Length: 79
Image 1 (cartoon, rainbow, N blue to C red):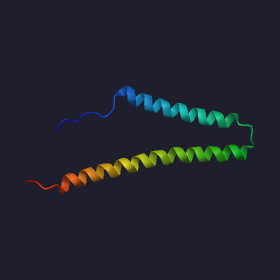
Image 2 (cartoon, rainbow, N blue to C red):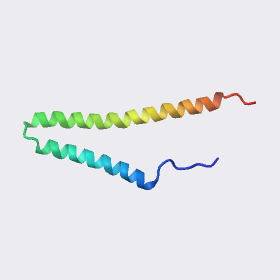
Image 3 (cartoon, rainbow, N blue to C red):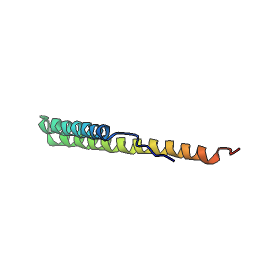
Image 4 (tube, rainbow, N blue to C red):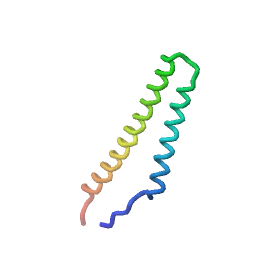
């Protein structure tokens, strides 16, 4: 079986760079926000929870797709 990488190094770098820049801008915005500390803390925790949820969701979707593919290949009739 010939395994081929799905993404190029440039695309992987661009994806991570975009993610890091977005998170950086989010927290710079929170730092410069002129609100009490408890409001900034609330937004910071909400942003962190959103980031973690995005990673968990994409992993769950990917794992389910791989399981469906592998299950389909395992139960396919062999004639």
